[in-house]
Image 1 (spheres, helix red, strand yellow):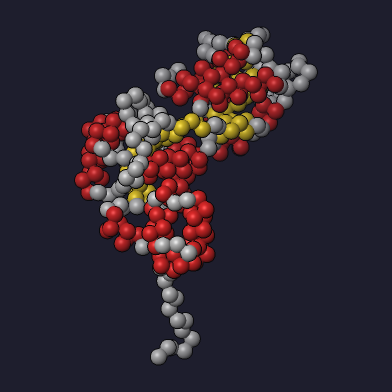
Image 2: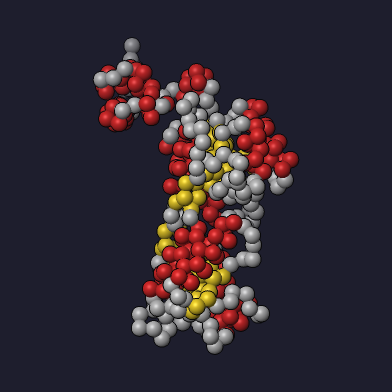
Length: 345
């Protein structure tokens, strides 16, 4: 007897329902969900359309028992300061959760204190407990202990950032040199002939690539490069009668330092001086004037990294792989929109 006003229980859609609707076997539906590379494109599209139309959701708990997969990705996050967080890594984490969720996976956030021993303990712990199917790493260095130990114990991993020689190359990253070369072309197109690149004195490979890419393209375009570390710092550089009319920074915070130095010297960014940044953090949109900056395709990077990780879980997954370079997007705003002082545009 049904209670007045009560709704009858909704029947759960099964894999057999999807197979019938798509006019395929249940095995084909299973392959569509778990090994789409085995399914012909037209069949794959038909099955996915039936899944979407019927609202079918696989029983992940049953699947985990059957396959041994946890449908969980461990994100071994880089060490960060909660009082001065890295906005780029925060954005990547958001994109990673979305990318994993789109393919039916959860993300387990892991953190190891600085030091190889702590990294080993965290990785060994999740491997022993079989908590995750694989790891995602970010902010990776060529000699990164996380990548080295993950490879040593045999847990699949993929990385945002380039792993070193001798390690698995399941990574995605931006082409830093190509990104700053685009900045040099942007500034040259606006009439700037005396330029400078401003960045931290560090051996970090991505920062070195940004500097090299800018300098190489500026030289190719015939631009004059001003010294970037004169005695007295940025203010001395801007006070020089032969000062550059455009400065490219290797990150948005360095661009903020240029804004402050320009203000102190009575120069207006966007009128007397062009400035560009890197990362397109929220800061860029709120500076006065708003900052031209290079935006990283975090969602594409996250989707690529997840796909490269999950490909390793398939029986016929890639035996070897090469890293993937993705382009950054130059977002042009008022800080560099004008022509160089004294130019004709």
